Length: 142
Image (cartoon, rainbow, N blue to C red; front, side, top):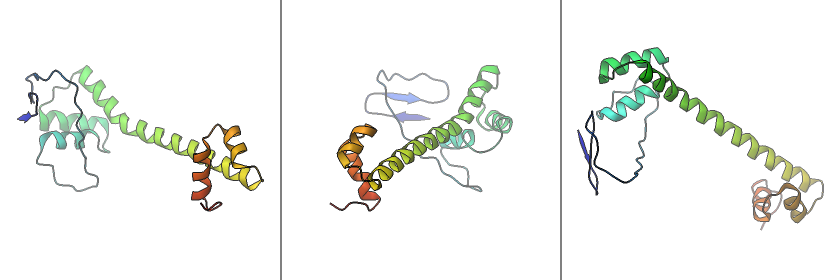
C-alpha cells in the first residue's frame, strides 16, 4: 500500500519512507458497537487498537488479523496505546473541572458585589474572559 504526498511517498508494511519532513495526519476513528470492519487496513487496525476490549484480546486480534509480531516490546507498546484514551479522558475531565471552578469563583465574586476589574485582578483572569464568563451566565449583557 502506498500513500503519496507532495514531497515523496510512504510505503506501509515494512518499507521505510523517503519523507524528510515532519507531517501530521488526522484520522477520524468511528465509534459504536457492531461496526463493519473498515476497508482501510490502517483505520481498521487503529479502531481495533483503541477499542474497548481487553489488552490481551487486542494483542491476539492484531497478531492474527494484521500479522503484527507480538513480542515483549510490542506488547508493552500496545498496552501504552490502550491506556492512552483513558489518559486523554482523565486530562479532559481535570481541565473541565478547573475551568468550572474558575467560572464558579468569577460568578460568586460578581454576585458578592465585586467589580469585573477586581475579579480579574484577584483571579489572574483577563478582564475580557471575566466578562465572557459573566455573559455566558446571563449576569451581564453587552
